Image (cartoon, rainbow, N blue to C red):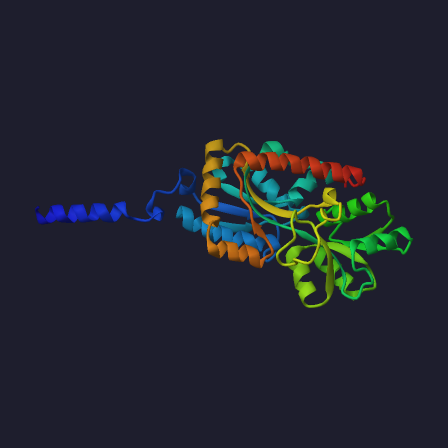
Length: 324
């Protein structure tokens, strides 16, 4: 065999054995990709969005730029993607609150079912019913018994018609009690009010924040909203165990694209995201934020989004909180 033939043969083996990352990127990734995060930098969604952007960029061989577009409870950023062009190559870091907003706000700027396409779920985390660590309430039954006896039970919320407000409102209605909602500008101030012990008696809070305050001895957990007990709080019962499955709701995050993006492109994006998330590093980051890695197909996510829109619209209507 001639020397140059040996070189060609050797190179053929090298390229044949090359890792998957040498493959050409998908067509949609040939243009710049922007991940629109409809909240301020540093929030719980942002702490998952940035590792996702890095992992996805490595997967497709293209930088994924994170752009924070907070405002109007996440509607501003979502509207930006919904009203964009498919050629803009934007991904929306969507969340459960985008399912609630259409039922609450007047003159909503887009139609979720038509103007956005569901790509994939990426994370879910339970919410936790918490009380002050020195509270006399050691169970949900204790709390509801006090409310039924007219003890004047107050609950904190992260704002009117937010998911955490709706969950507490549904608990009040299901239990047939009368409680008073105290609204704050975000869950942070509500948590501080609960810790102070003189303003509210309980609230629902997202897992990362709740666990941090439970571990430092400031709050006590009475129930979690996940289908099964949370690994971070193994001794805390689920709402389902307590016969309150209909008020269980998890915080979740998922990726959306503009509604006119071809289905084949949406599927390709989903496949790339699934591969990008399938690493020990991502799973560790998710667990560190109290989240579980959850993915599904665009078709499955579309069905889930439709169910969520209906569920939260019914919840908002049931509590008389629509048309703000």
